[in-house]
Image 1 (spheres, helix red, strand yellow):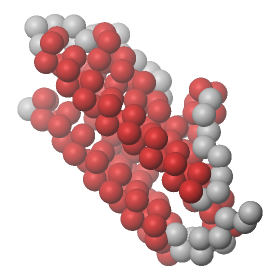
Image 2 (cartoon, rainbow, N blue to C red):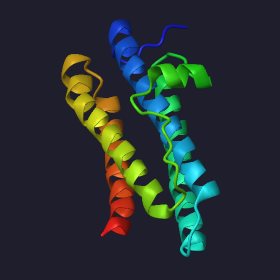
Image 3 (cartoon, rainbow, N blue to C red):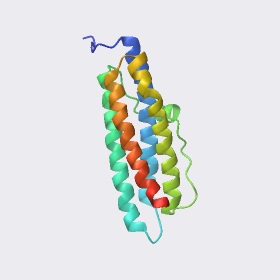
Length: 157
């Protein structure tokens, strides 16, 4: 059965490819946030352990919704570590310190990179590909990343 949602097949393919990159970024950030949760050390261990947990839970929800949006557009979501590493804009680099501030600085940079990527796709999704639904969807996702980045940044003041 054809996937007819008022968007050409070519446009759905292009949008799905960009969403696949976003899904890869979300997965890498999720993994790095899990790492912070598991390995943070210091006097603030307990509070930061819980804080990082709340962040990776939000990222888990984001990953699921991005993958489901790709499926809504009639394409398959990438779901292997190698595909995520191929598609991501982020690096797997991990600092050699396990203090909360070290993790936070790195995670803020990654959130900001994702925010810039999303912001750069909002208009093209709507104007070039006529996919207003995905444009609206990623605008909301960008706002979630902005809030998460703010929460992280607030620890650096």
